[in-house]
Length: 387
Length: 215
Image (cartoon, each protein chain N blue to C red):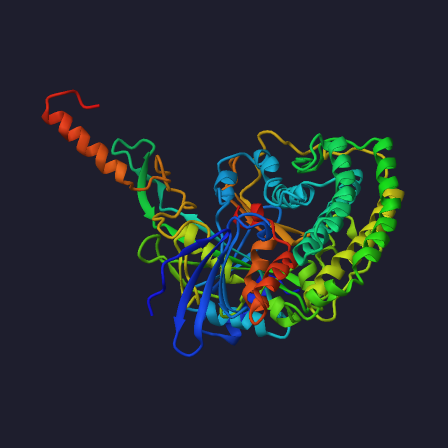
């Protein structure tokens, strides 16, 4: 029963596990340095032949105790650091943090800033989902082409972020009580041009790949997650909606100005990997609609609450929890103030960390090649998982 | 949705022995929470999940908060009558008492089926060291699984009946709990014993025996 010593074989570590009834099971340690694991993430997979019988995720390779750092700096000081959580979606991380601080300090946000937040969050959702589609297709073996098409569009959105905030990915744009810089009419015209062309890009992308036979064979019926199990495990975002549960925090909480916008919440029927891919495509189409409405209605006006005090901000003792519908799921911030300039407790509720809870359930019984596709469809970012 | 006070009184009518009270949040957010004793937290959690009016089926956020022991100074005024018949002399007497420290676990609950929330559930450990234990709520909400592991790892709260209580973010051999308020970072926490360390010690000894300066 003693396992044989570890034998390193390229990217994976393989060990034979002796089992009296099933012959040899194989324990494969996938990662942390493996191109398919989207960062430094490790899965310890036990295999019976090619089928997965057990899977344990191993995290923490990127852990830097983000929360402790948040407690040792001021409220404003944490804002740029939230960019580094889910580094694809700095805009939504900023918004969730700003929302929690605004609740803690009782601040309001001017209307124009709320519109800008919606525009930036939906742009962020577009580029996150388009990246995810590219990565997922890459994981299924559609090597290169779809990912490059996806990145071409993403780059256009990042250019817009850079024009507004000065940085492609580490935007540090939202402030509690508003936004940092105002958008010029020229910038809004550029956004309108991008939004106008995005639907055509999606049509092209879908024509290229959505009906592809190999994609269907690799993803349909793979990694099925049912609604009640998903709710119990705290799954949020596109993954929950692919499982057939219509829960979108933009609709449920109605934070920001989302109640003003007309949009639908796409819901999956099967909860498999293909549904998780399709939900993202459909959500992008809804985001285009939200962006068109926002660009049509955005008013002129101030972008900061005049009462908001960014430096030396000392909220009254109390606590608050603010959450928004990020592209990956519910991103929330929980803050406790003791009246000093630093938060007493600063907590991030990371969506992709909680979404990993069901990884083993989804992979059991599937082949090891499918585990890579299933992991890709969960959409994790290790900056957020490990914090 | 019902207010925390209404939920609290309904819990008390259903589970008469439960220790539940409402903890006010003085800030503008006004998100008040239910403070539940650790003996009754499991049955209260099951009630919150299964009650048809609440149906809090989704546990969103689980986190720990460290409250180290605090020295509270009580100031009381004692007036002694002046024997000469003047105004009584008032002296301030300061008494210090120690409020024992504890760790708190906070659960943010929502209902996906009824679309309401949050209801905030808090429970506290008896102390910060050997007594830092609360029942795990992973059997009630599976989403607590990884987050309770994280609290165990970073705060050192032991969750009784957790299915897989191991460190999750720090490595297995790590000793301390870095999210505690009194955590002191070691000078070099990536230090690992290597054969070179022994060799350097040996060389130092040899040099000292030869009467040279330790290098």
